[in-house]
Length: 276
Image (cartoon, rainbow, N blue to C red; front, side, top):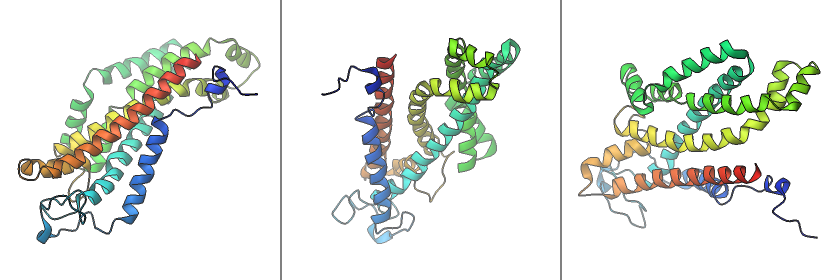
């Protein structure tokens, strides 16, 4: 007998396609490409500078003769890897703040949320540029600046979700049974808010990719000779009219990565809404 997809228990086990699988294929392709490419992403080859796309150099070469396809592949480590680390740390900090605010009474909630609101008072990208500019352009300062401005939305979301959860009968029953507060948070609160956090996490991941690329394009992020998509766009800016391929392929990499991650988040959001 076949099982109907209208069963909510079945829906929860179905992966968010096509976004999730596309993201997995994308990650595997980048990893395999970095292992298979014969070129060094930082080694200059002045005899082949500004070469157009060909069978030897699929995406052409840049102003220093470096293979652009190789640099795009290695740039995924910086653009995707750094953004993944930033948004994950920000999500962890925000989740902890939101859970503590929802669980520990009015005064703790007020203090934590007013602190969160004070961070919200400044636009994220401008704050990140200011922090990175004050401490100097470097990868570490870029990461710290983006973490500082990334946790607040998670704290707000988790607090609102956790407040609705803590009022449920099974939470009250767990407390009446003497279950410690940390076990209530870990076993009951956290599993019920994770789907919503994951949706925001995917959306924030794509925004962080754009932020890292944008800050690197402005000179505040990943520094040369490291291959990062925003830094590659900066390198190709002077050659936009004579060798546009230097900017086209890193730009397409940013576009495809952000689009894929957003599709994943949208699919999970729709599936979550169907299961409510």
